[in-house]
Each structure stands twice: as C-alpha cells, then as structure tokens.
Length: 312
Length: 100
Image (tube, rainbow over all chains, first blue to last red):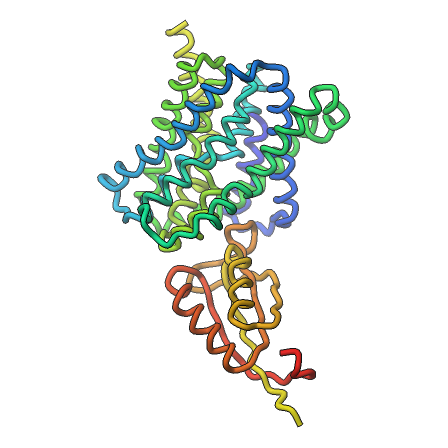
C-alpha cells in the first residue's frame, strides 16, 4: 500500500482515540493550496505539450457526465433511501462533484506503479467540480425561485479550489516545463510529503465525521460505500470510450467515483440551507473518502486495466 | 449630557455566513461590527474550527435600540430555522455615543 495512506490511518486512529493531535487550520489551508497548485501546474505543463483541439470534444463529454451524475443519483436516493428532497439533492451534488484529495491519492497510486496518465485529467477535475453543484441546487429548488444565482455562481466559480486549479493550469501552460523547473522542488518534489501531512489532517477530520455517523445510522454508511464503485465505473467506461490511457481511465473513474467535501458543502449550505449538512458531509468524508483511498482506487485501476485488455 | 447607553448584539454562527451577515448588518443600519473566529459546542454538536466546514464566527455589533430590533428580527426570520446561530443582547455604555 502507498505509504501516504498510512498517514490517513494515523490521523483516523488518533482522532478516534481522542488524541490532542491537530494541525492548525492555517496549515491545513496551506497544504490544500499546495496540492491544488501542484495538480494544476502539472496539468498545465503537460497540456502545453499536447494537442488541444483533440481535448475539446473530450472536455464536452466530461462536462456532460458532470451534469448527468447527480441526475442518476437523485432519483435513486428518492426511490430507495429514507431521504427528503433537499437531502437527496444535496447528496447528489456532493457525489456528482469531485474530491481533489482522492484525485491526489490516485495520482500518487499511479506514480507508485509507474503508470502515466493523460495530461488533460487536471482539466477534467476542474470541469467536473461545478456542474453537479448547479444541478443539485436545481433539483432541490426548481427553476422558479428567488435563488440569488449571481452570488451563488460567484461562490462556486471563485471558490478556492477552482481559482487555484485554473490558475495553476494557466501558469503551467504559459511557463512550460522549463519555466516551471525552478518551482519543482516546492511543488513537485514535495508532493508526497505534502500529501502525507494533508492526509493526516484528513484522517482527523474523518474521525470527527465518523462520530456523527453513529447517530445518523445505516443509510448514510450504506450509500457511502455502495455509491462510489458504480459511479466510478461510469467514469472508467467514459474514459475508455474517449481513448484515454489506462492511467487516465483510472483517474477519470477516481473523479466520478469520488465525492466533494469542500466546494459542494459550502455551496449547498448557502443555496439549500434546509438540507442537513452533516448527512452529506459524513457520507462523502467519513465513508466514501476512506473507502476510495483504501478500496476504490485499486478497484478503478483494475476496471481500467480490464477494459483496456478486453477492448484493446 | 448625551445618552451613552447602547445595545451590544453578539451573534455566534457558522463561518460560512460571515460575508453575507456583515452585508446585512450594514444594510440594517449598523455603523460597524467586529468578527472573531470561535469554537464551542451546542445543539448542533461540537464546532471545533478544525477546518472550514466546522468553524464558527462571533460577530459583535454595538448599535441603538432601533437598529438592534431590526437586526434581531431579520436574523430570527431568515436564519434561525436552518443555520447554527445564537444571538444575545446586552446593555453597554459607550465613550463616544456619536460613533454608534
């Protein structure tokens, strides 16, 4: 197993055992900032080398997936689960959107195995973050409402993760590999170390969510475990159809199989305040995130490998 | 001698509401406010400020009786049902009444 995952376990165990270990919020912010810029820069540098025209149809396909995923999840939750309209819509938004941390663990997983991935994946990460949130709000609210879309779209598009990812992509693109070279020690060489510390904090946060889980019961846990693999499979098949490499197919599956815990909670809290925030946060952070880094990512990798072997 | 008694409103709520709340306070006539980060525990569980989704802020406003009434009514009607929010008022003396 990738050693960075043990840091998540350490944080989880320390949190569950009520250790006084905690990182200052400012450190957590810095670590997530570094991760987002690194992912953006790496993508930008690679994109500058590749054929952009070929990426556009793929990007459109990925956007379509972003709109479709919550529409798959929502009716299912309404039909099967004990969830009200607002809660189901909020969960759909969380699971349609993506988790950057899961993506980073996926990148690290592929690096351990020396598997390359397509340069457009960080761009897909950006594209998948927003649509599901918009659809989730519409599912909860409908089109006719006093929703302040201007303010909301500002919140969604100028959220930290989008700004840093797009900024990193742009800078990487403009500077190219040689221009970025002086920055490599901070952003690329330290990637694993930063990820390890970040996962330590994630373990602590997940532990606090796991304590909420005891009260929320079975439905959230069952959904958090059952949802990611089918959703990831959608991404794997799409990636394979688009002609991505095994690594790229794996990462697209990681994206569709992951659930947002930063952008979606913030947006849903403002737009759909009656939805219970701890319900979707517990599912995405307390259940699905650990599931994905332990079991999900290897499963997506197997699916991607199988698709490529079978389909050639 | 000018009347130097004012109301101090203290609001403790989710950090995500900070920007919105400050806009509302100014719109309702507050001449200023003070925001601090906060953590604690209450009906909605422990809010430990470990990261953004579980952070609280504490907003303090000194204002006259009329503005205080407007603010408490507005927050009660729009936020109490769905957000973690408490609000309390107290009487204070200020040194420069013309500021508030």
